[in-house]
Length: 189
Image 1: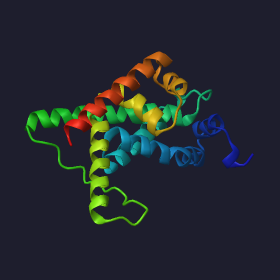
Image 2: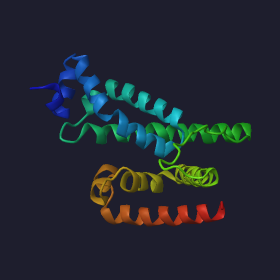
Image 3: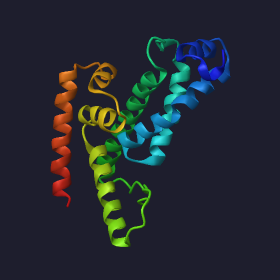
Image 4: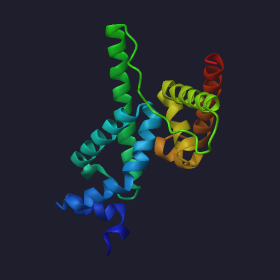
């Protein structure tokens, strides 16, 4: 069997048997979607990279708990989400202790593909950054279902399974997340 065709469960079993290359293949398969997820969750590209790296270290240490009946990416996304939550809690504590705002994320967004006037590009970039910050500021219970469905492309059913919720609960949280985002973006104009 070609490594590229191997199932997640097969690669995990091979990794547990000591084949480092198998875990490397699992990482290659999932690193990009996990990084996108972390960026959207935490709102900082560099910090998202760190969260994914930490998640892979944690996954390696607890690979025996992976259930091969589910996609490896789903299992990893839970670990990444928990790493992001932990980091956000730490950041809140640091802000509270120092009473100073967190440093600017330094995120650089891609310019629009089409040639546009500089004012429009700046306006679009600012709106995108506001939206990104607003999503990042949502409570986790609202943020995660929104990211999974609206940005990662999961169905409500898939998001519900991944989060251990009912579809109705996901639908409810999506409604509340969108409403809160709209209010936040309206206030920051």
